[in-house]
Image 1 (cartoon, rainbow, N blue to C red):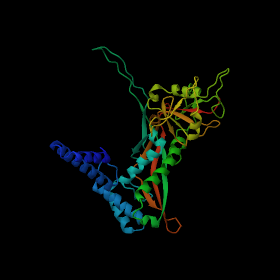
Image 2 (cartoon, helix red, strand yellow):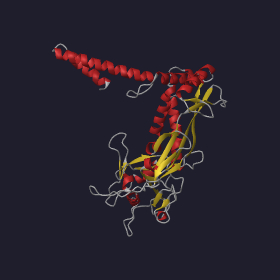
Image 3 (spheres, rainbow, N blue to C red):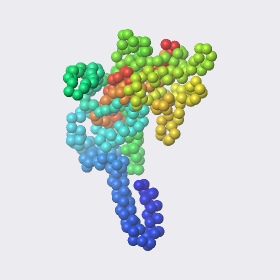
Amino acid sequence: MEIEEIKRSLAQINERAGIAEEVRADLDDLSKKFEAFELKQARAAARGMPSGEAPATPEQIEHRDLFMRWMKNPHASSIRAELESIESKAADGLTDAAGGVLIPELLSDRILTRIKQVSPMRRLVNAQAIGSSDFKVLRSDNAASSGWVGEGSTRNETDTPGFEGIALSGGTVYALMTATEEIMQDSKYDLQGHLIETIATEMAKTEGVAIISGNGTNKPRGLLNVTPESAEDGASPARTEGALRYLPTGVAGGFGALDTGSPYFNPADVLVDVVYDLKSEHRVGATWCMNSATAAVVRKFRDADGRWLWSDGIAMGQPPSLLGYPVEIAEDWPDIGANAHPIAFGNFGAAYFLGDRSGLRMTLDDNITTPGKIRWYVRKRVFGAVVDDEAVRVIKCATS
C-alpha cells in the first residue's frame, strides 16, 4: 500500500473514530502498518538502496561510505590506506595489475544494473559473471538420443552427448569521469548518483558496439564479427563457425518499394521469411534489433492487404512489436546500405554470451592538467562471443 493511500485511509477512519470500537481497532492496525512502512523506507534510504533489496551488511556500508569520502578527497593518503585495508577483506582474490581502488559492491551492483537498463544489447544477450579471463562456454553437440519402449522392454544404450568449449575474447572497457574540486566538496551534490549514471552510460555505449561488431582484439567478438553467410552457403559445406545466416532484401542497397505489378514485390516479405527461417525453438523469446533510422523505414511497411506490420506498445514502457515479436532499438546496428546487415532477429540470449570479470576498479588520473579538475578512470574486464549461430538471423541489403 502506497504512503498517500495510507494517509487517505487514516483520514477517513479518523472521521468515523467515535462511531464504533471496531473503527478504533482499524485505526490502530493501520497506524502500525504505516509506521512500519516509513521505517522500512528510512532504512533503505540510509543504505542508499531501493526498498525491497537485501539489506546491506555493516562492512558493505563502511566500504561504500569510505569510498565516497575518498572520491571527495582522492589525494588523502590516510583514506586510501583505509580503503586498501577494507579491500583486502571485501575482495579476497580480486587483483588488478593496474592497481586502483575497488568500487564497493553496493555501488558496483547498481552500476551494472544501470548498464543493463541503458544497453539494449546487454539486456538481450546472456550476460554472466565469470571467474577468469580464460573462461570457456560449453556447448553440446546434441548427440544425445532418445526413444520409446514398452513396460519391461529392453532399453537400448543412447548416444552420449559431447561438449566443446568456446573461448571468449575480450578486454578492458573503461570510462573517464571528470568533475571540479568545488562540486566535489559540495555536500548537496549527488556524487553517488552522478558516478552511477556517468559510468553506466559510457560503458553501455562501448559494450553495445562490441557486442554487435567487435573484432575480438582487446574487446569481445561481436555478432557480426564473422561475415554473415546466406542460406545457400549453409547447405554444403556448413557455414563458417560463428557466422550468422542472412536473408537478402532482394534489392541492392536497401529494401526497395512496393510493386503490385508482375512480378509482385513487397519489401516486407523478407521480414516474414526471416521469422520462419529461424527454427521454432529459437522463435520462443525472439526479438527484432535495429537502429532508429531503420525502424523509421520498417515502421511504414504493410502486408499485401494494406495492414501495418508494426504495432506500437499499448502501455508506457512496453516495446513495439513487428509481426508479433518485440522490437529493441539499438543504435549501434548498421544503417541501411549496400551489403549492410541493418536488422537482426532471434534469441540473442541463446546466440551470444557476455562474461563480466568480477570487480570494477577506479584510478585517479593524475595526467589531467586543467586546474581545479579531478578525473577518474573506471574500468572492468568484459569478454564475449557468439555461442550459437543458429539462434539469430540477419537481413542483408543485397539482391542475393
